[in-house]
Image 1: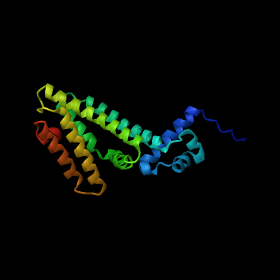
Image 2: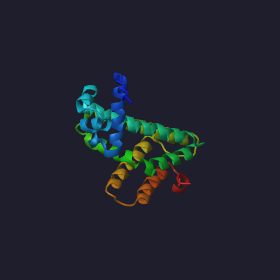
Image 3: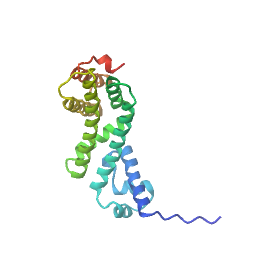
Image 4: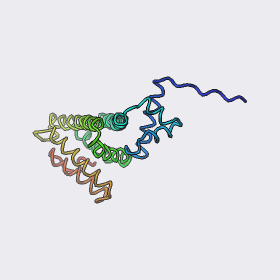
Length: 204
């Protein structure tokens, strides 16, 4: 049987293939693993072809991180919005953030903090997704204040506190500092106290 000729990809399809490959490599090997060679090898093309479509590795890293991290915000936001009231939404937000299934993305955040020091595009992408997380948490707390179930004068500050704790405890996890339950309890108890709830209300 005569082999069928390989279909030539359009420029848009090739770019999409490369971007998808970069995401796959990042999830497996971290942002530092995303190189011309690794992305090219994952789709069976020459590194020069990847460089043709993605001439800036700084931009590729930024877009790869943004794609993964933004998808997580969207996914968690949809889960949160399914809950009937602000306390339940805050509880599921905390549970979703702490879900072990998201550990791979948490590790990518650590990469973004580090590599972003010398990659302005990645730093900007990181700040942008941080703002998205902030907006989600702030809206949940603001709704709780509005309906009287939570008490704080500054929903923005509570959201900042939440992700400062999340980022710190994710860093702890990378070197196995304290147990997962200790890290999760620290986040839940601190945020519960910040909005006038008991930890049990955010873990039930």
